[in-house]
Amino acid sequence: MEIFVTFTFDAAHRLPNVPEGHKCSRLHGHTFRVEVHVSGPVDEHRGWVIDFGDLKKICKPVIEQLDHHYLNEIPGLENPTCEVIAKWLWQRLIPELPNLAKVIVQEGPSSGAVYKGETDNTGALSS
Image 1 (spheres, rainbow, N blue to C red):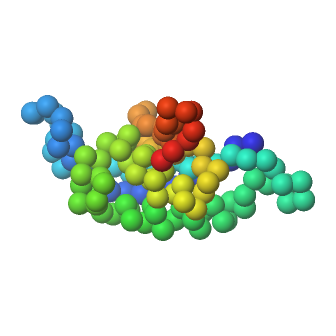
Image 2 (tube, rainbow, N blue to C red; image 1 turned 135 degrees about the horizontal axis):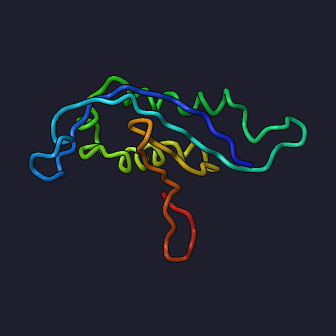
C-alpha cells in the first residue's frame, strides 16, 4: 500500500545554469507543492501504513527549511530545479522514513518532478 501527505511552501529562486536570456535565470518565486509517498504493509491492528500525523511531523521540519527562503542560498540547492529539490527532500527524509517511495515536487499546476531514489548497479535502492 502506498500513502502520501501533501505540503506547500513559498520560495524564491533562480536557475543559474539555463541559457543566457532564459526567463528562469531571473529571480522569481513559486508556491511549490510537495507530495511525500511512503509504502508498506497495512498494519492489521491499526489499519494503516503509518499514522498521517506521524508522517507530517517527520516532514514538516524539512519543508520549513524551504518555506519563505531564497532556495539558491540553501546548501545543496544552488541550482534549485524541481528535480534537484525533490532529490534534496528525499535525502533529508529517507533517514526517518526508510519506506519512502517517492517525492513529487511541483512548481505550478502543470509541471514538476518525481524522485524515487536511485539504484546502484546491483539494483539496491540508495539515496
